[in-house]
View 1 (tube, helix red, strand yellow):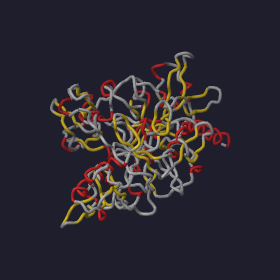
View 2: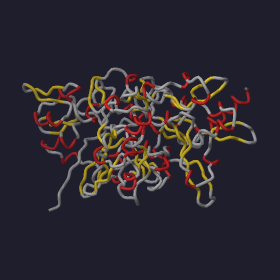
View 3: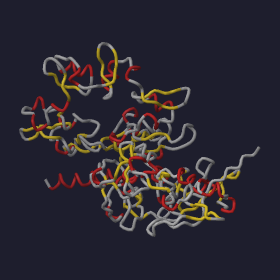
View 4: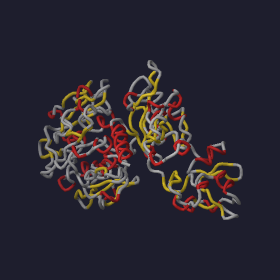
Length: 496
């Protein structure tokens, strides 16, 4: 028993040395930027006119197998339509119900019933039916059916081989072990290995064409044609040009980059300026703060400490623990107070020191008690305080830091490095509270505040300044917020 426990510990440590992806946070159609990626997602269709990937309507799906496998669709009377409920489908047998929808795997003899009525592993009483329950893959052990949580629980070779994507039988040790990329023999199987029999977490693999072997990999070095496929559609190519960009994690579409805080509504005296602030409303000659439910863009919503952006709308913030998310970036895009909890599925307001995090997915994007960002050091496999852009080796977290950009490696942003679309503002380091600002004048340059007129003051300073008598002045912010180094703006001069 001691040997078995030690073996599990070693296996878990070896997995944590690499990048783990999660398949319950896969990309949505609009995140695919390449036609190739869009075409490989059966839920999506490429719009050749707009060059964008769109969610395929159920009514346009002709294949019964594709239709019934889509949780949002159902196949009835020879056509594919939007899914309603299982009880609307007439099916006398389980097979008839499954033929119409993957959501419906039971029947009362007349119509279908939802999967919720399936039995859990613990409810199966004989070995023959102990295969898969409502809660996941099952294992027959010591004369009872249990939920299979770890490969080493399988005591026979036949049991171990039931889940080849996760487990591998060692003829030498006579143990069922966690599968590794190096144990995959063929190129077409070299995609990813599941971290556990019922885990949403996978280790990325890549085929080494020189050594002709499968190896552990990280998404950042995948190419445009392997980025989505080798991450089980949890990552996408960052550019619409296959010759540019990098392999980037598909975070929730609501994830936002850090932005400076706007002027408080009650500090704005101009109706025009008030109407440009998405958190404010002009009422009875005064600029007032909107209710959370009246704020639309997520960037504006999360500027308000009492608001949260969740399920596509701005709502009153309750507590971090009430929101579900799969990364630190997603939690902070719900409310800036929130971070990813230890369950890796919900948010929390409890900040931990960087060194306490033992995995890269818990470390990257997290913050310590001093509100400093953490990063995963791939050389030492430890979580550290992030002080320089070059320390971050994952493109996604580099690009969402507000201070850095990914160009083959993580670099500190300067105005000169920004293009016309991103020529706005940046933090002076990953953990800085100081913002620098840029303007577009043929090229992206440091801002010259003397160019801001009365009409330009608020709009071109991104809501950080208002006009006061004869000059453009910064608004006053709460003491605990960011210090401002300079005026900001983006001046666009059109050459006629």
